[in-house]
Image (cartoon, rainbow, N blue to C red; front, side):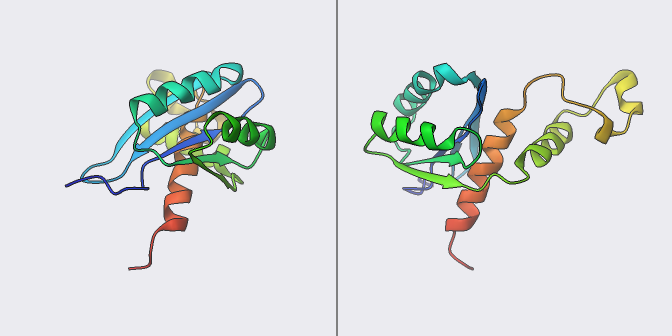
Length: 143
């Protein structure tokens, strides 16, 4: 089964220090490539990701911190791509929950309630994944 055109997206959870970056490929199977990159290296990382995955036509950006400046920079660097802002309200809490769902605490940490824990590594990539999923849900046709 061939990948649906226009359904491959890159999503970015923008931040002042670091950004979550995710590539989501929709088709016969779903492939996800995730990373957390320093904000000042985002355009370089995005350029590499676009080179590796030329079928991407949409770049989704969370509407929070620094999204205006970031979207202008991306539109300027990649004018052939469509840039879409997606509401990122609540994604930090949902991303943390998704992180712990995929990476359950081990050892003594499993005794603590999840609500009292913070992931031991940055999880901005999970927020970017949620943004990609929101975009795809908002653009899907009703069944």
